Amino acid sequence: MAHWLMKSEPDVYGIHHLQQEGTTLWDGIRNYQARNFMRSMAIGDRAFFYHSNAKPPGIVGMMEVIETGLTDPSQFDPASKYFDPKSKPQAPRWDCVRLRYVGTFAELLSLDQLREQFSVEELTVVRQGNRLSILPVPEASATRLLDLLGPL
Figure (tube, rainbow, N blue to C red):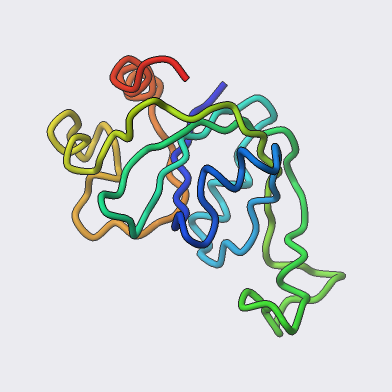
């Protein structure tokens, strides 16, 4: 099982939305590196849910990958802000995964707290100016994060 960190703005799609829905399609990714990280996910992988563009930003919950290799439907929808006119159904550019809500942590682990505990090599999200919405989390860092966050 691999671990990931996946960012979303809480007013757009927060942990509370995922909790209500139970599962979600993680669509709208329009960065090739983030897309490639998503392509390498496997069923059973876990993802830390990170609220970005929040005060304060940080890890709030946990998700599990339950379906991989899906075509992102928003790329074909002209009404979607994620519409990609260069992407065709016979040759889609963008993928997505389906995630299941695992839980919400009792306390948010803020970006400032993460920077106190982890180096850039240990946890990429602490890099100044990092804007990538999907990041791999090394196993040793995932273990430390889970210890810091406590039970769900």
